[in-house]
Length: 245
Figure (cartoon, rainbow, N blue to C red):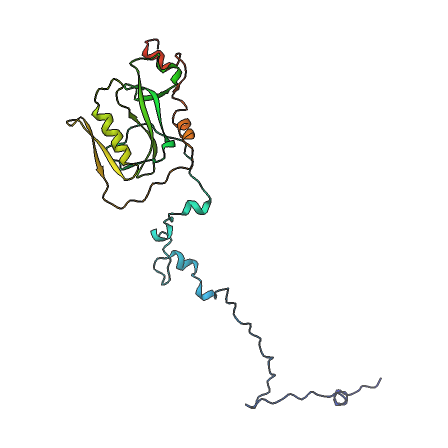
């Protein structure tokens, strides 16, 4: 077998010419890199706070996670959640002497009714007119007024009506006059025992108008007296007055 020299074999192959770099070295040029333009919507990584910066108070760009200005809710937070406050309690009471109150100006939100008050139990009941005449000396005529205080608490004010026998009652007279003024102004209704009547103090501040609930007066009555409506003489409150309980 004849051996072919490697030099003769290599002579038959074309050797590619390597271009010379201007600095005298033989280097192959790399293809240019394509750089995509930065996305304006995506911040560069260097602009985002690292986990250390967000939690380490000594980091130069530290975020105070417990800063009250970050955690405080806005006044309309509930509106953003679609939340509406439900009115499930309507107290029946006189206005507190320290409350500034308003009375609903619509006559449809007031009503003359018969009421029974158990002072020892601090309970007051609405009495059906059909049995009110059977409880002489126990039932009194009241004017139920829809009212609200500065804290937004809706309540029914059972103002006592004047005595039907014509006797002058300064307590009821001054209360009704105060209620009438309260339909237009924020007032405090303060009992004065020495005077034997209520005193009226009008607010000097520029308070906003009250916000009334989006409910009918009938609904307010139902909420206020759902467990305190006397419709028959066998009611526990009547039995207690008769000494049967």
